Image (cartoon, rainbow, N blue to C red):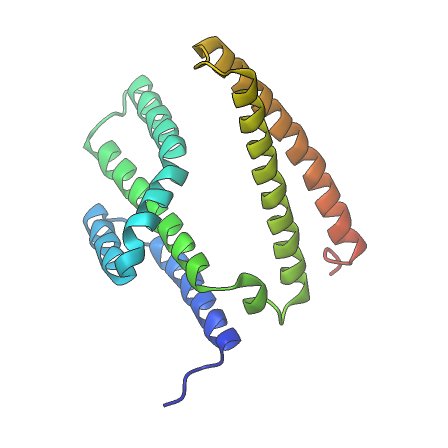
Length: 193
């Protein structure tokens, strides 16, 4: 049996990823999600550890803050019960699985090559990759500037001011970038019906 061409194989993996995301949205049992996570980790073999650490790093702060907010809201409304823990565990496992599968997909698929037959999708991906690189460089510049201004370990106040300045700059940059990206897409007819 012959193997599919690399571009076709990448499109198949991309389609399988999309199907997995849809399927995950219908799973509502944390035990089943935990089993699925274990199976995915086994299937990832040597990549499992680094990808799991990366996935946890990408989701931990956001998921903890959302989960804590949800718990506080449920407690304030007097609805805190056993269903709350079940719901939170299900949602957090689902998000972890989706992020892990996304990172795993990115190690296996060249998205630009997989999306090559669809020019609009390729354009959107190219714009997104450009924005990601812009933000990566901006964060690196912020980190280097902060380290150069604080040869000794900085105090909490300095770190908070730096974080606030960084967040403000990133917000301004993202608003400007989204305007530019939508104008670029509109000029190329991406929004035409």
